[in-house]
Amino acid sequence: MVRHPAESAGPPSSSTQPRWTTHDRPMTDSKQQRINMVESQVRPSDVTDRRIIRAMLEVPREVFVPRSLQALAYMDEAVPAVEPAGGRSGRFLLAPRTFAKLVQLAEIGPDAVVLDVGCATGYSTAVLARLAKAVVAVEVDTALAIQATQTLRQLGANNALVIEGALEMGAPSHAPFDAILLEGAVPWVPGGLLEQLKDGARLVAVTADGTFGRAQVWQRTGKVFDSRPVFDAGAEPLPGFARQADFVF
Image (cartoon, rainbow, N blue to C red):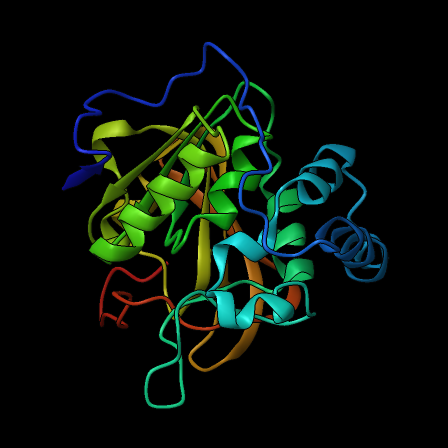
């Protein structure tokens, strides 16, 4: 497992709050677009946590997508995180309403340590860093992990750490976590990932064999993991979560 930046060997710092800057913002109307996103997509979807709303108003979503797609950054669907190849992108940012509802479902407190699985270019990590004490983000793609690290650093998210590794493995060396979020659809959740939850903590994900599925929450009580579906949701698949015959939760 590789940490980015390479010289960072410890957990993310939580001694200071993230500092958010506006360097190289490519879209002059991005602030208004964030307001429109929150007012038309997030608030109407029963997202009432003011901390989530504030964070999504502050984090510039457009800097986490390719320049050619920045005009689409705030649309009400998943947005490619990388330039499409062969007409299709392999990685996406979750649609704003789906992401916001998952974050609210995770019940992240200000003292939480959060695992962000499949951070891609780092948008989800940037938002979570506004809510939690510390965020560990796992990304399997080396180029995306480096890009996420650089963008988060530019935005002053000094309580976030991006590590490179298999998404389905999580980050056991940094566990346990107060919350775990999966940034895409998966057909199943490995038991080893659930084991990285603290007692009483939650994992949230969209479960689906295809593009459409349901948001689901798992909560740990001792050695038992209770799960329940919460709302219908669509999401692009995360790599590495091929269905297994056994140990499916």
